[in-house]
Image 1 (cartoon, helix red, strand yellow):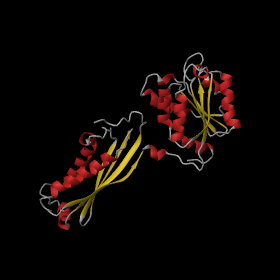
Image 2 (cartoon, helix red, strand yellow):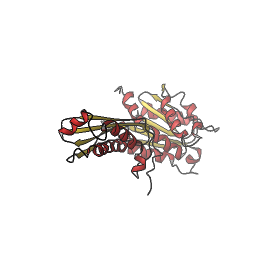
Image 3 (tube, helix red, strand yellow):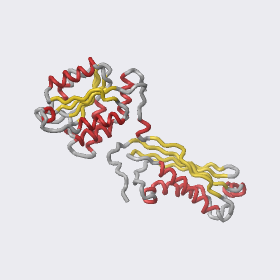
Image 4 (cartoon, helix red, strand yellow):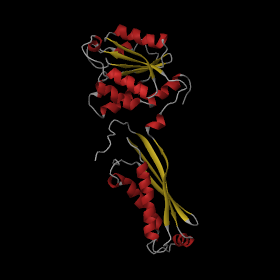
Length: 304
């Protein structure tokens, strides 16, 4: 048995709401409201049981990850012939919490059943269902009338000279295509500031692309000049983009802080500098996409 690897995912606020319905006799509802159930009031006991179940889901269900929960709420609605249990779970984490919400609703319903079975032999748990969930990548997917057009620019002396094959640029192109972005240009150039400036300017001013993603030249080496090349290109900075990528990367390697990549806007083109290593580029993409594509809508004046 292998637990699914979610280490590449970024933490986001995850929420889920589930519901369980327990059908009972009207006399049972009267006993609860009158405080006459032999085992005591089942509502607070079932609430605690539901909370405990949500917190223990990773131990109960083999393929569920242990999740650090930030909130678990379990509420009850007593009607004439049924009790509706509604559970809400929240966590800031890499994976969803729908199973935690379902576990909370299910165990709360089972606890009601246990405490009421001696007074209601016809009682039945008639349904357990997920009502909603939020926080996954699908919530941040972007839709465009026409695919955004992008360029992938690789800055590397060794790749440009043919001494090394490009991996990071190809990875970026593949990942952009997976997110519905058309890769209109792919180019490899040496780590020369003038070449970087000229190429990026052409992508923005002549080809008027929506997105330019560069890889390489963001470190501390003497030939790493990509950030400096952006100085005369950017009309507006977008520092939060690369800050998010560095924060995500720092949790996976202590070297992420050494990246000096920048992000900014020229005209209606978003430019993002990613590290030159394949791993660094991949981790940055994990952190930024697809959510960063929302910036393309904003740049076009479409707002949020």
